[in-house]
Image 1 (cartoon, rainbow, N blue to C red):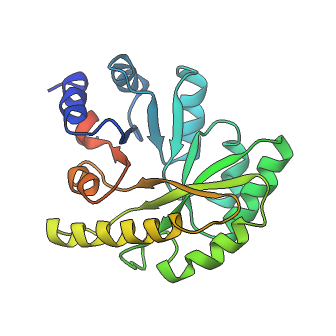
Image 2 (tube, rainbow, N blue to C red):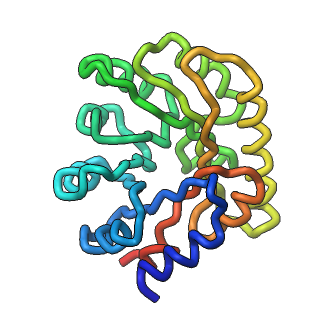
Length: 217
């Protein structure tokens, strides 16, 4: 099955109010072009160098999402190139974003990444650290938090659903409060194998790679 047909099938299963991000990491421009021709404009990358290369070579109307762990020393390379950073996970990174985006006088739109499974080998803040990070965001002028993102531990449908429910509760609780620089518009969770469950549990942005482009080379 080709990329166009994959996308047709996926888009049939996604409500209109859910944003599909095509995870294009490690995929060549030719494959991104097929997705582009099928109507995709939101692409997700997790390596700064690869995003830079594709940004320079690909269509200018594309919205790039940075979905990987962002090292502070790489922030300067993506300023002005990324529509949404999904992986704010520390005060150190927040301060680096604020500094670099201030230098260019533009706003960084970001999601806070929650380590919902409390996995030691995963990035993201723990749930109980969220308020203290939000308090730091409120001091910023060039970083705006648009919502939350999570990557789940490997599990089955039952455990995935529980994590998605937990994320939705955290997101809803934050949405009900008034914070400076923070609007909980986006809940980014769900990937190729579990995006349908994520949507059932409240996700309004899903990140699909393998389901569109096939297995990673």
